[in-house]
Length: 234
Image (cartoon, rainbow, N blue to C red; front, side, top):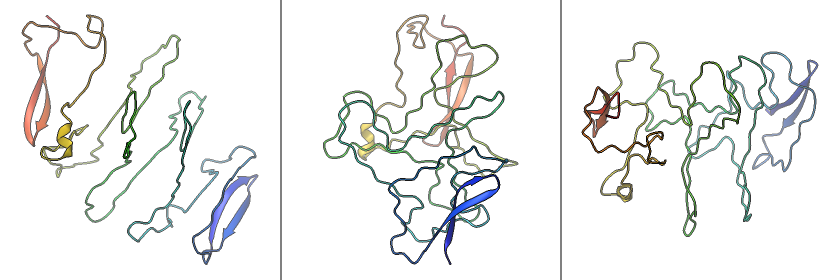
């Protein structure tokens, strides 16, 4: 039985390519371009692999649904392994350029991640500037922004749906981990803040004793602790 990959749809007419699964190693496509009219309907899809009811099965350890390798010898500008862009112009839309979702319906996995991003310097590679496993940018153009809104460079959430009672004490919006006695003990700072030391900056140096007006609950090695905050700098 062969797989059917629907490449594009125009005026309710499907154009498709049938792949013979007996071919060892699958199909190698050096370049694919889809040019045509916009998608129609509420469930239109330009490229579709598998469906919700019948997904492509990955049942053997080590298998990957999509595997791509690239290399670059460029010495300037920016090189992208993959570039995905969505331009949204409709008022009221929630626009998302890319969405990754991992679902576990039964059983207990060793670890679960919605997305895993890794930056590895290799044997002799390094950066003269900054390095990060994950970089998040929020770009606000030079113009007046009116109306209510909240703006973050990085936004993290937990969604405990329903009456979730089995969460451990250590659940948190953000978790930090640096194990002593391993190579991770070279990580000595939990947070790093950069900015001008002034009364109008994010970093405000104050030598006077601060009396906390409230506290933020955290955990340290599983024990509940509290970070104080104050309502004024004085």
